[in-house]
Amino acid sequence: MNQTRNTQRKGLSVKMITKIALLSALAGVLMLFEAPLWFAPSFYKLDLSELAVLMGGLTMGPMAAALIELMKILLNFVLNGTITGGVGELGNFIVGCAFVVPVAFVYQKWHNKIGMLAGMAVGIVCLVALGSVVNYFVLLPVYAMVYGQPLEAFIAMGHALNPAIVDLQTFILYAVAPFNLLKGVVISILTVLLYNRIGKHLEK
Image 1 (cartoon, rainbow, N blue to C red):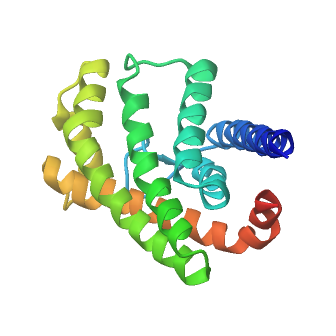
Image 2: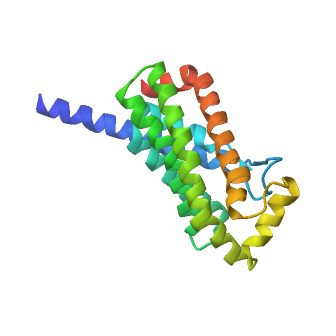
């Protein structure tokens, strides 16, 4: 009996590892396809990689979501390298987890449609809030240092798109926060539309 239980646990573990690997690879591929947005400078581009991460989080829990997010970042690091010494990738990992982990955590507690929607609402708020903080204190200063330009150069790029952007605070308010809000909403909508087709199979 014990041997049978251990075999079942091992089988479940192998299945989970396999699903994490597959979703990480899918997220890494989706991360390669980016689209610029009209209200943010060109280095802010929308990709759908969080869709695969969120599917994994909803079907396997918050820890799996964090692992898929990490593997996605590492895969992108291997494919594209880094110009920030890993700081940008670390920031992207934190921002990504700020979205997918709360969604997975709430859905794990309330495993129904309302729990999913509530988790997505919480995740979007966390994404916008933490994404703004990380960009303000980490990502933008690092990118300014890497490109050898003052922060004012990025603000000028934002101002060219939106005259209301006049300093770093308004850059965050009118470019970074809307970008993360739109990303969270788009990924959430796609997840709701695709979950019955994809997520249910992953759960099984």
